[in-house]
Image (tube, rainbow, N blue to C red):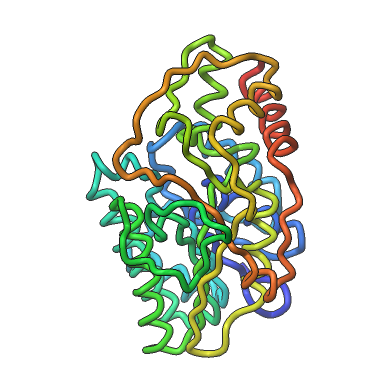
Length: 329
């Protein structure tokens, strides 16, 4: 496949995932050719991944490759044969709590997979690799008067998931310096919205509230998250893709809403969108969880003009509208 502007196609890993599908769709809408890579694993309902893939398949400029990113020979062949010069690497094993019980899934997907993609980019002549990191790299820290900044310490991860994401940043730093191809890491802050991940709290709460089941509120409801709507996230990802560092450069950017919301406030906002009240039971913090996340996005704003637009009430309303249609409720 050939891409627009003489740059070849854009490869998007994790294209059947939540963020990956929306990023691929935005690129296709602006006329890019996109090759998606996804292994359609069963971490959550594969039917939802199939639905996302089917939506992308309506674009003539899209091709899906079912493959494991840790298959280094396959990834190298893909990059070389496609002529891609830009890669958006969003595939990973997600989930903080899941990493407690399934650590080796993170070794393969997040560590071996990231190395596989970097090696493919190095040998294939890729000019910009954009990859997913996570706000979890900041560890457990209280909310302060300002958001988490990219130059804040990231040496105390409280979950294996967080440790693998920080490891990916360090690997990318070394590869950019050694081999010269620019890389940009994106620290995502609690992404939500239509077609989202069922393992996320807002999604699971919706399912249980509508079934009349109780919801478990961890951290006794004292946690806060920088909930960021998917459209705003895509703005940031595409903006970074279009603005690579200089040759040999490696930059890391926060992508969040820069407006943390308490868990109880999120639940009440969701209740209003659903028109139902939740039956709540308070639980202590779970292993690997952090108290709060809060993105300082000034670095991303300076690069791309990034400015989140969708408030939580509007975003959850859009999610609930999609969810009702999906579930036929």
